[in-house]
Image (cartoon, rainbow, N blue to C red; front, side):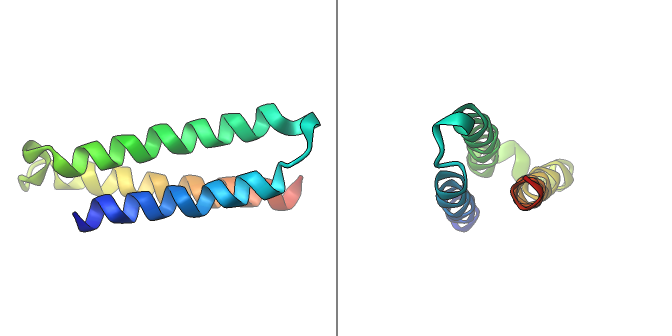
Length: 84
């Protein structure tokens, strides 16, 4: 449950950032693309958290890589917002 909660917190935090930074109608599609990518990544991480196969030592690096990818994607989006 902890990893599922972390996934929800990451998505919830980034959704507010996307909503306020891309509030203009001209960049609405960029906001929806960013939110869509974050939503798919968050749902994937959330789902992997509750699948028993990924609890085995063989697949733990895959699960860790997914969470690292979710975190890195937030950094990429925030950097894009800072540049744009």
